Length: 472
Image (cartoon, rainbow, N blue to C red; front, side, top):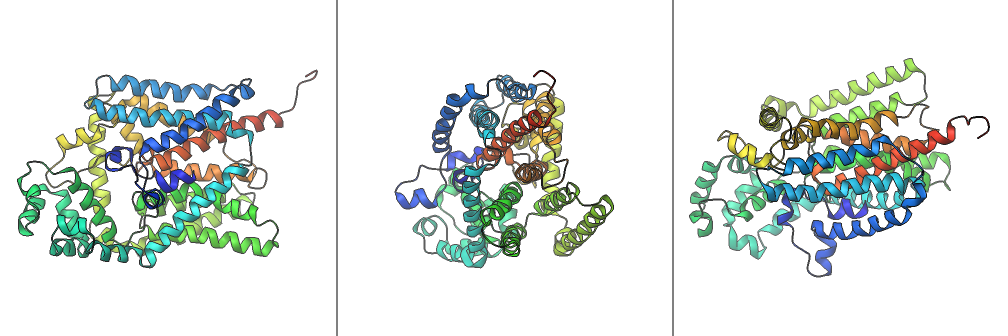
């Protein structure tokens, strides 16, 4: 999880833009290509196979669901619109199966997640530290550094860079509309390679996306973009906060509460700094779930939940009032993506158009003023569009059944680690109704590892807590 958060935060569909680092500093500060993650995962898989026999007596019908899902992905790839894209998706999906099985068979031997908790906390701290540094001047320093970098000086005129960094709305508009982009190319006398090319060169989309990202004051930490940071916080903050509480056991109780509360507040502040509207709303839902599974009296917990929703919802409405007054552009764009994916799922209901091919589908149906998108921004709907409705339903069952069956029933005190992990998994799963966490290895890999662990520990807990039959 430490490696995933810090080095594998780039979406799978953009892996062609990630080069193998050269030199120590690049290995430390730059993202890693997926091939490096595969090498680490192979070591993990070897450990799973070595310990597999130790848990061979435990079986669950749920283990067939991910295998069925992957079989449907393979079937959908046969007549894919883009075989290369679908093959890339299959290479990404296969590790998810391995991680889920590893969490179930191997990691669930440790119901307290003692060793992994430290690595996860370290990854969370470094990610939040990076996000805080970005907020406190790092983004501004990066914007100033661009004017001095030889690559940017040689590729783009300074007046173009200045306008792109100072006017994110303009930059977003030229990224969305090819005609406006061509006008900008001619107005600012960009390189001849851009002028003569009938199609946008590969580096142009990458560069404009980077300029838009750092031109705003939204932090993204060590992940690909701000909404991915929000997903990572939702996934790991409950568990990381509990880990802080456990590691501070030598302190007095008030000090432990203060330390854990400060860490949790730090994560929530970074969530707000990310500017993720969906992250804010899902965070409200996660806090409500935490309240509802607590052991306090029903009337009190319902009252506190309603008060929490009212306060957080009011703060959300106040902070983003201008956003909604201006037409909620990002929400409108998502609705456009969802409509295209829905129509494609109805046109190809059984096996879809091929894993990862929403890019091809949307490019054919989008209007001229619509912003291009590689992913649907809804994992469940993209499953229906790419691989058919059977795949979407199986994927939903793979995620939903463990979260439903393993939900906390006796408050927070009986199994606190399981409750904290369950809460993070619920937040991530809800966030992906409006995001694409499945396609970001740094988020999807930890999620399915923890999902397998949650199911494995739940089964083990049921076996030990159920009364034994006579004579057994």
